[in-house]
Amino acid sequence: MGNPKAFLTIHRQEAGYRPIHDRIHDFGEVEQTLNANDRRTQASRCMDCGVPFCHWACPLGNKPPEWNDALCRGDYELAYRLLNSTNDFPEFTGRVCPALCEKACVLNLVEHEPTTNREDEAAITEMAFHENYVRTEHPERNGRRVCVVGAGPAGLVAANRLNLAGYSVTVFDRNEAAGGLLRYGIPNFKLNKAIIDRRLEVMHGEGVEFRCGVEIDVNKLPDGFDAYVIATGTPTARDLKVPGRELRGVYFALDMLAQQNRVLAGMEFNKDQAVSARGKDVLVIGGGDTGSDCIGTAHRQGCRSVTQIEIMPMPPAGPDDPQNPWPAFPRTLKTTSSHEEGCTRRWNVNTLEFLGKDGRLTGVKVQEIEWKPNPEGGRPLMVPAGKPEVIKADMALLAMGFLKPELPKVADNVVFAGDAASGASLVVRAMASGRDAAAKIDNMLRGAR
Image (cartoon, rainbow, N blue to C red; front, side, top):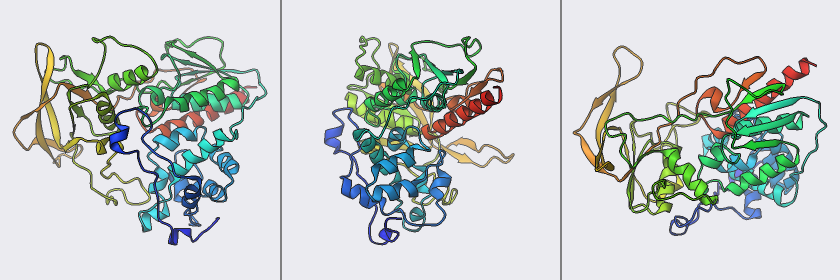
């Protein structure tokens, strides 16, 4: 390591966020960056721990000790080569990954100050693009063609890997542009879409063909391909079927998030189509990352107030989680940049009914609940713990996750990847699944030669 004792004297330093009064007025990325010297200093904290649990925790098998050492020494090109050897698109995970590696860092166990792997990853990749270390490859073609259905993180990784292995790859996506969840589910203030376009330009230059705005029936896949990757994600959001669900003002979270990203891309929507929080009291139902993204988007659209409710109990404040001890990922209370911008947060709250007047939402009837052990075992029992109350709301956003799709029976040359195979999960896990799908198809087609 560059300095195996640096962690003894150097504390963790995060780049932090732009000031709240500044960032809530635009959709620019909220996260700031350290200068090059401070970034190298942070990389030097990666100690010679012997057993790198960061590598174990990362679904992609990233190797932070290796590329942090290169970064510490100022060798950005080597750092990028090491990083890119396991991670096709570190510019994505460097922005939106929850950094499983950091929670498994030895320094997180002993000091609760893990190495800044995620920020280091983003900085390495930005320097790589700036210095033209990201080269366009021109692989020799092997005569085989592969179809990838879905241009989200799993599909893009599968396409990238197969293309570099010599296959002619065509990617189909039903949306007007590639990116999937990265483009239409994650707000620009977390991931600027120019970052996606930059990588797509590299892939296009390397020979990947993209056909967007094309709906593919997975039961009737297009002819002319030797193998197929189905990476269509989890398109069906979990609904909340309570009285009043039909009222205007009740939306799925992605109705808002996807439309806002399209607006920023130049699309226009009329007044009846617009899903806007401007001047409204907003209730977000669901306590996960998607709900957090709705909070940040609502603020930027000019909402009056935001409340977020979650049916499950409030997680422990941390930093330790007795139920998931190190090196497992702790399920502790998470406060995002969006929460910092202003939000009333409540837990153990069940939604009973959407209330309205003249067909429009005016409030949501809720009730505090408790979870008690089920005497018969299995899922705990939800019991009322308070009287019903009404939360004033002109807009309610359902951010309760997505349903795992039912997979049809397919031929042996068809492989499912990402959320389509596993159900909704992390971007980094979808990318790892796309890589595995590419390897499976490569092994299969090589054996068929």
